[in-house]
Length: 324
Ligand code: FES
Image (cartoon, rainbow, N blue to C red; front, side, top):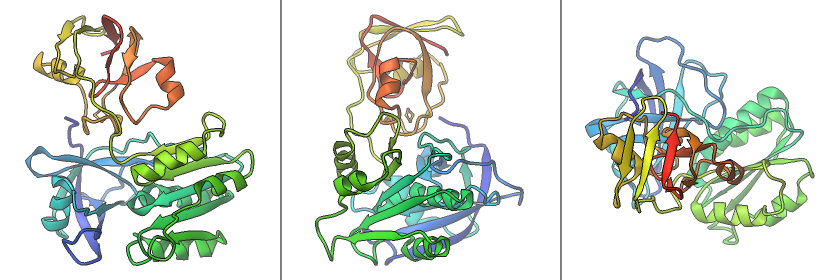
């Protein structure tokens, strides 16, 4: 478990949609309990919220990185929402304390790119809006595409529209209740300048379509972040893990992940989501071949085998040596 390191207070709660209903969104404005500045973050970063009963959930920061006095997150309540989202919708109020982990970022904005294309689907708009605010502050050229079920169900729509209008940036929206074809991802990518960088965050189906539409975009320019794991956690076991720093050697048995085996051995490896989407458990690989199952590393990073996520990935070699 990632240790809670920042004590924050819920300064303001903004409710979008009827409380407790599927599709409703709560926006939490978190301030340091001692009134100090919070640690800086990059556009695209997320934080762990440490909730009751040991629940830890990751949420992207939606505010501008220049805001040092607050972290703002948005929590969508879907029909299948897990305990964390439901807890934040039903039991958290202004004035409550929430312990927050330091911001982490695996969805990096290339700040000096000549042109950026930002694509958001539903609640996936949160890191995208932070990126847009950063690009506006830097005076960079970009375009913003936003798809949602309806205008009424599109989180932050009014704030985004006002912010982009103030910067002279067009907002392109597609709402399913008016046009069920969704975002024209192939057209968006095809019409962009050849040297553009692309950023997308949204539902899994949208991201699958984005990756397919952008298959010919040069490596390193098609950025995205998923909210849910796409792969199965590796639990085949049957290999050994050696820890180079501590000198230990541990068998990962069938049915276990590397993280399971190390926890059983009393080894404390930082982790959070345990499903390959947050990056908290990343370990450098010294030797051996991982069986990558995460949604954090890019295809090139996976191919390099320089690091791996030990919560979900396994091994293709009899032994893995990790820098732990
Ligand atoms: S704990 Fe989140 S990626 Fe491993």
